Image 1 (cartoon, rainbow, N blue to C red):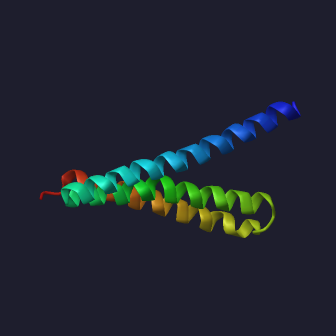
Image 2 (image 1 turned 30 degrees about the horizontal axis):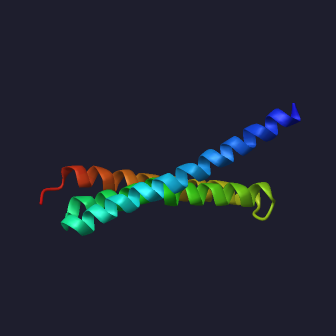
Length: 103
């Protein structure tokens, strides 16, 4: 049973890392689109994607590692969750704005 649990933890970590890298890549590509076409909507889209994926995942992953290793006390769990959710909300807000903005 320990081997399955270890494998699951590695898979969760790999997927979180992969999502962070992939989200950063997609946000970067949207930023390149903004630079290429000077599109304000693409700028908001790139910021939103970057906040929603890369930044939120990094904050959540780093916080969970620090909590699991007892480098942070458990009193920081809710503030870390709040920060993560705030980045996710801001990311979705930017994406929604990019879809409705007029140039």
